[in-house]
Image 1 (cartoon, rainbow, N blue to C red):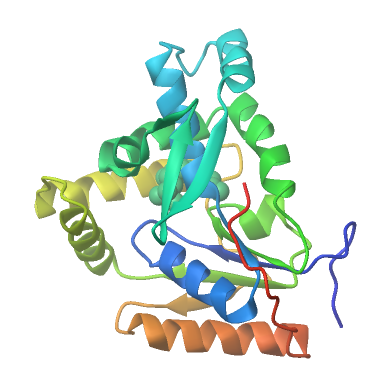
Image 2 (cartoon, protein in one colour):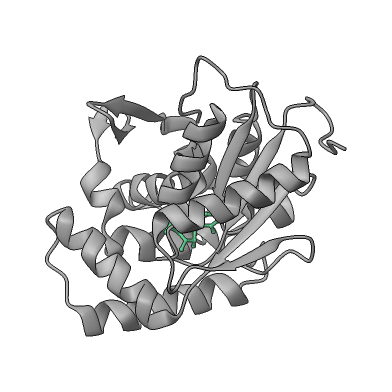
Length: 242
Ligand code: C5P
């Protein structure tokens, strides 16, 4: 039985703390299904970046609302890589840094920011289907999702993965410091009042600590198939929606 409502467009949610491979797994699963993919963390990162550039503090409600009106966040796929364009400027590198993640976590705890970004995330639900990754995809944004996955891994493995990822992108990182920063960010995300990072009771928890990306993708596809019961038809036009 497919239990999506409203637009009748199926959604798969992939939540979990940082460094569990959500982004990579979501992109691979979306590719396999031929569905769209939503990287909700990138929206929070880009919003926080815009707010900081404009000098808008997290407690400045009017500033947050104005900031939303001014900030056109666009995701573009350039040479196979997703770039984040904010008001015409490519801000991908700044937004993807660990500092960008910390800033996102601060603004993400503000209810006004979450409600602004909620509509944008829900608008990403377009045919033939959506794979959405984040922290509250299955609990809040798409609580009626057809399949809910929660990826997890030990703190050490997550820090090592993030370290490798940031190094590959050319960032200057220190593993011990990164481990501490990730633990702080996850604690903040999991203990905030508004949409905290929690395991939805109807989600499949997958521990990725000792699994390759291929193994995780296979396991996630298995969960999705068992939830959808029918193998979804592959679309000819997969893409990124924002
Ligand atoms: O997933 P990513 O590391 O890019 O997310 C950056 C930050 O954005 C998270 O640490 C979290 O504070 C926030 N976020 C959120 N809800 C989401 C996605 C991200 O609060 N759905």
